[in-house]
Amino acid sequence: MTLMRNNLTYEDIFDKIAKYQDKIFPALAKVAEQGSMPELLHTRWARILQGDDGTVAFREFSESLGQYAGMFDERTQSHIAEYRELVQTLFQMDEGLETPNAYNPLAA
Image (tube, rainbow, N blue to C red; front, side, top):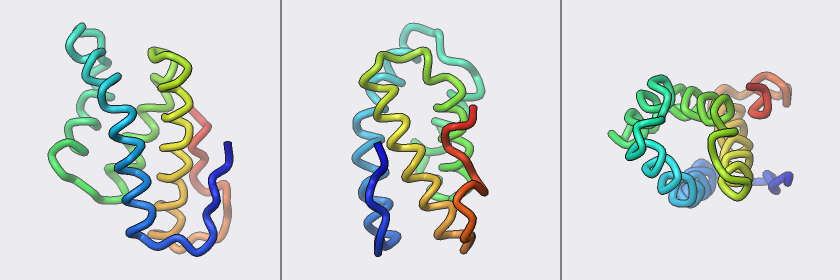
């Protein structure tokens, strides 16, 4: 499930993040329509929908997705895992971190 991360630019990362959002957001909308979305996930998703493209917003949203991934089917869970890896890459690029475990997208 590891994505290739060599020589990616911010534009590449944001393009990939947007593609995974397109795959994840319909499942989120369905949960929201059913009224079963946890408030924390809803709040963080709303920030992304409102256009907050800061690293902190993506990281927090990614953490919430990981925390509540069990609410979704396996395919959506797979998309969430890939999304979280992309956000980890963005975080590392933005913070200039060289340690791969500074932000672990798989920790819930």
